[in-house]
Length: 180
Length: 180
Image (tube, rainbow over all chains, first blue to last red):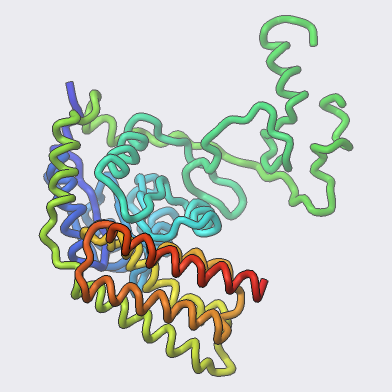
């Protein structure tokens, strides 16, 4: 058994034609038959609404609408046909503050350019095999920004459901039936 | 400390802490998994796609010249700033084309350009003021990258490439020693 990407539809949003062609060629080698393309965020959102792709792979820097503005539309616009669609953002930026900015706008995966075939595949595999829950909290809506569970986290508690390490131990001890 | 006692290090009453938020968790249906099945992609397919990426016949030079032209514009804007533009904007006029050079260089067989542009971005991400000396450093990056393109130095450029990168790094270090 292997993945069968034949029925997968992917929207690629990229303003550089050579880069677009490379991504198309990689996806076709993976077996993807339906590739939809757009050169900027606004064109992409129109195609997203009408063609409802299963996955979006978008560049960050584009005009008139960039990849961050596009994900905001996808996650929050009333016309969006699928607010949960997986979204891979490609960019040359790798600095932490830019990664955090993208994450806080609701992207699913972040991929730094230049990338290898395995970099792209790894992100697709993560989306398929380990999809994250979505979180609606205050002004955020998107995939859960916490990828790792840290039982001993001792920073600021941000969610009402967050517990201190001590609370965590008490709850788990009680679950096991022992007295705390 | 118990569950009732929130006055310790985990307290959310600290003056600098935002109130804890009510997070709603949603598990969207995994539509992609349903379409593609299980088993991953074979090494053969991944290797084939990687070979295709590495043998891309795209001529990077016209693209690189566009990005270098944009970088030149950014340099000129930063050399003669008007009163109503922010430092952040001036830096962005140089950082965005730099990011494009970094992102695309290695994808199209010019990894030395990616290495140099990456160093330039790291420099621009750190400086707060695009003063005359900082812009001189960017000019040095621009000139060196232009030379690499004109000489069509593909690959890492060997010893010559390493010495060019080292010289650019040295210029950045000297700047930070003097101005930070």
